Amino acid sequence: MSDCIFCKIAAGTIPAARVYEDEQLIAFKDIAPQRPVHILVIPKKHITSLATVSADDAPLLGQMLAKAHEIALAQGSPAGFRVIINTGEIGQQEVQHLHMHILGGPQPVGPMVQKH
Ligand code: 5GP
Ligand code: ZN
Image 1 (cartoon, protein in one colour):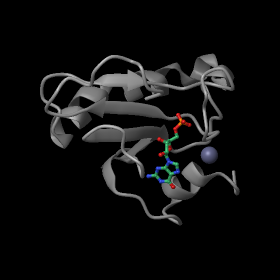
Image 2 (cartoon, helix red, strand yellow; image 1 turned 60 degrees about the vertical axis):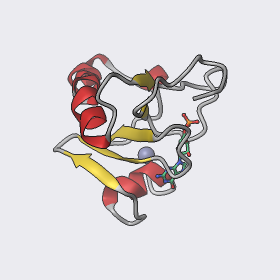
Image 3 (tube, rainbow, N blue to C red; image 1 turned 90 degrees about the vertical axis):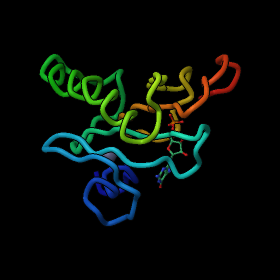
């Protein structure tokens, strides 16, 4: 999608601090980190949200989850992490391109009193 900021990041037309890339996914640092480790994992192809995935997207979604530990470890969250996928209006999704937050760091991320 031409006006989607995460599509532009995936295409490389907007810079981002990339930490992982494969055929289907890229992962990059959140521009406004909520925790010492705050990574966003996105599909390269435009999918609006978890509310618009199809059955064909199951392997892609599996790949996003399957890479979370490796990315968290490489970014300095060795003892675990939290994964969040905000979806739609009730989920307070701000960017309309599916993305998975990986939140972590050297300390526990604390109770879920904040949005992230
Ligand atoms: P949401 O609220 O939609 O789940 O999360 C969107 C996330 O994208 C926010 O944490 C926000 O800081 C991040 N974000 C928005 N625009 C950019 C950008 O241009 N670059 C990067 N790296 N992160 C962004
Ligand atoms: Zn997009």
